[in-house]
Length: 425
Image: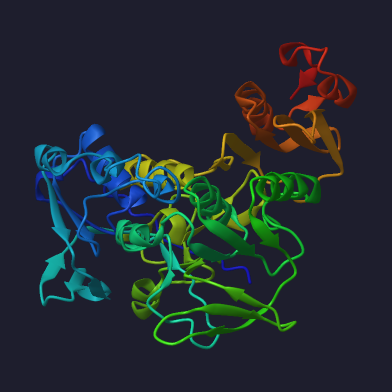
């Protein structure tokens, strides 16, 4: 469903009355933290209030399924900046409290603890929550998500050598966790309902590569499976599949994606459609309210469609755009998305969206441990997936950004240096 926004332009700039303005940011994740920090970097001198439902200062989530889970990173290393840094920037931080309601006509935000905050501008950076399993008995205490610091802290005691872990979902998080747990000496089973892993983000050839890598590492990876039940007493002891197979489990990890947190916006009457609907300036259907990050559905002129992106890159860049526009700068948000995933010794880096490609060009060996897959449409590069080839990724990032025309034969030939590949915009 396409949602059109007609938003009157608010000509008042935040710089004119900076000392009397209050900006309230709901959501103390990467997007919310980036918005607050960027406001100060760009010279905003007014009041900033950051409201977070978690008890932590804003932190990075990607290490949760990797370095934080395996114990090589401490909690403080995840923080965008320590608490003292936010104090130094004069950001008021209300932590551990849920934003309960927006009273738009009075421009007030009501919190679950009874407090109310008046705002001149409000930013919704509410992110998303883990999608949980809905099969019978899936709410047992040994069923975990990997979305927050608290999730990983609860999961860590289970991660003991020899234990049996069942991961439901073969996306980025599921495969990253499988790699970590396998290296910790656990018996890992990954269950994917689709015909291949990473099916929503890449092509069959790349999916097959990662399936091979995980199986060679000892992961019992099964695709095209349907779960019918979770059996056990006080905890899940077996995962039951549609064909009658019972897989023993000491614990289960749900890795089936996330849902955008839109209830606050929806209850306030803002436009919501697979996220909080914003315009190219990150404004919602209320000109005093902006949205950024995982929760926001934004127009993207580069791909000529609306997108809701779940990535650190999107959260950071969207947050910076919101900060600029709160200061009256009218910056259009129109980025080329990119993503990454670390699994074992491999780094997968992706740029662009490959949907609609008519030619795939592989540079390197899909049967090895490093390669690049470039996606072309009409001879122009629209996306790329690279595995442990950072130079290829940086090359692709530049070319995808301008949709450069390339010589496919040269691109595939490793004897031709990337800088020598013919390209034109």
